[in-house]
Picture 1 (tube, helix red, strand yellow):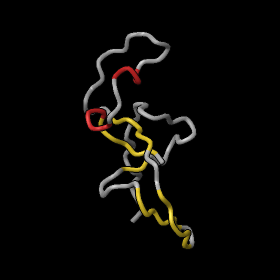
Picture 2 (cartoon, one colour):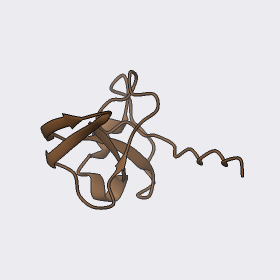
Picture 3 (cartoon, helix red, strand yellow):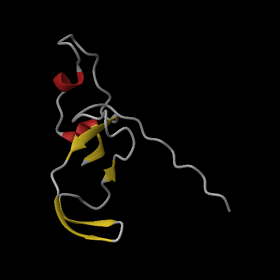
Length: 85
């Protein structure tokens, strides 16, 4: 599971942000990065999966692009689509 976390709180280092071993520009401390979390799962009830451990209140789960996401990879927040009322 990946959660979106500001770089400064992620535990990622700037070296992880560079590709190909080249020097990378300084990372904005508020840039969202994907942080991998280990979860302990419980029962599946209908379409819901019980999470027993690993997430904190307020964690924002990465739900788009999950096949390409990697730990400490910069990500962008997508605004929710408005609902029809």
